[in-house]
Image 1: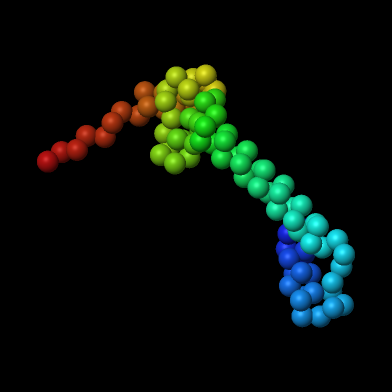
Image 2: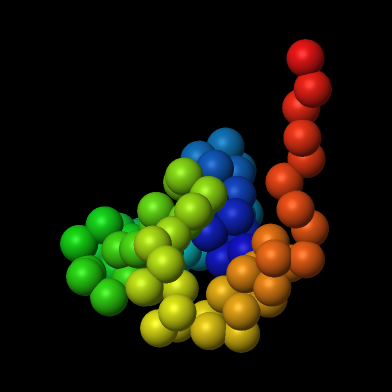
Length: 94
C-alpha cells in the first residue's frame, strides 16, 4: 500500500509540484530495500535452507517425501494412508 501511495505521489509530483513531498523518495527507496531483503529471505528459505526446501517441492510438484511428511504433518499422513486403505483402486476392464 505504501509502495503504491509513494509511487503515485512521485509520479504526480513530476507533473504537478503540489504533489512533491520531501520524504516521498526516502519512503519509496526505504520500502524498496525492505522488499529486497524480504525477497532475498524468501528465496533463501524456499531454495537453499535444508529444513524448508521440501515444502517448495510440495508447492511445485504437488508431492513430498513420506519421511518429511511424517516428521512435519503426521496426522495428515495418517489420514491419507487410512483413506487409501478404505478405498481400493478401481479396476479397469478392457
